[in-house]
Image (cartoon, rainbow over all chains, first blue to last red; front, side, top):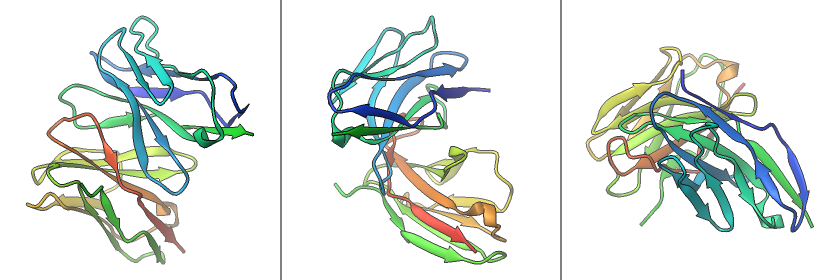
Length: 112
Length: 113
């Protein structure tokens, strides 16, 4: 079945460090790919998305590129801040489908 | 626009009881999805509804059920609660059938003692 695999956390970085969180997926067809972020005590919120191969999603300094050939959608940010500390979820959804599949989540800690 | 509202925010129950959780989607959104979030299992898909019809169901026992009303509000019910049902239950609304972008509520934290 369809699935999403993320790198295990937690990831601990110092402020202004470069961030990469790896995400790979298994799915038939051409799913849309997403990154969601969850801050403590809150629900998830959409960070960015990409709907077809080679699309780059970006928001708040975060970027991810839909790589069909490697079935990947890695999240990157050039300079993290303490306020980026949260749990990040990679997800996929097929066009016309009725289910969004999430990875296990990666917790990020950013130290001042 | 008001966001997705889930009630109650916290709930404590004992084994064997049943519980009903409520979700009010963003105004105009006709689809609602439910997820169970636990530290060990991440987000597990429970159901997705559109226009009062269940469009998909996850791999959960029959004790987990849900419904959607004509105003798009949704409820989920868990009967005969077990300790392992302790989790954060998240509801998400989306604009239309199959619409990909989800808007989440803050969740209902259920503790089963």
